Image 1 (tube, rainbow, N blue to C red):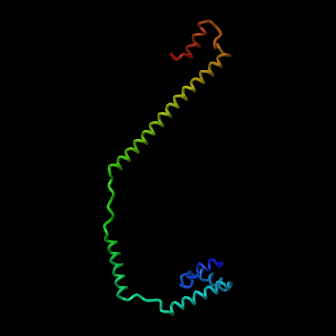
Image 2 (cartoon, rainbow, N blue to C red):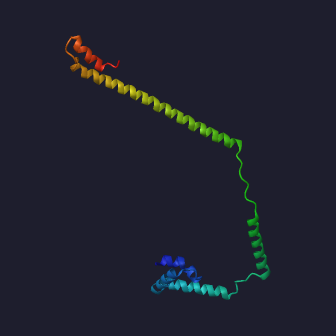
Image 3 (tube, helix red, strand yellow):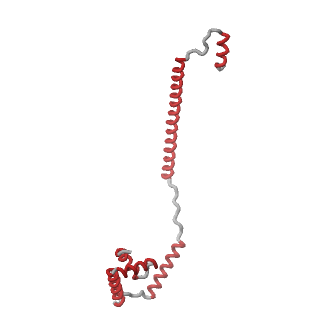
Length: 163
């Protein structure tokens, strides 16, 4: 513990409000630090001077009883108080909710439209690229059957035709 912490805890120590650990740390620091010990002594002298001067007055019994009665009444009133009224939905709130839902629906629809268009475009691009690749492959391979004999060509064609 340092002097700053001791200074902050001084009044708590005088009032007996520190826990056991803090109290022991505080007292150990006081044994090692003469400045903090002197500050504690000054506060103790001030406390005894104020209490000796008769500046502390106890509240009269009727005042104390009246305050306690009012506190009990206030506590009972809080217990029996009606719950706060529930808020009702006003038309402008329903309108705001409807507008929000409409905007969300419109946004979802627009997003779906954009996504479906790009999917169609992607399909077209894929088909065009595939056609181009097939055309490039056919440059080196123009014929599969190198004969004009119909008995050879007809079975080959029937195997590849989807009729």
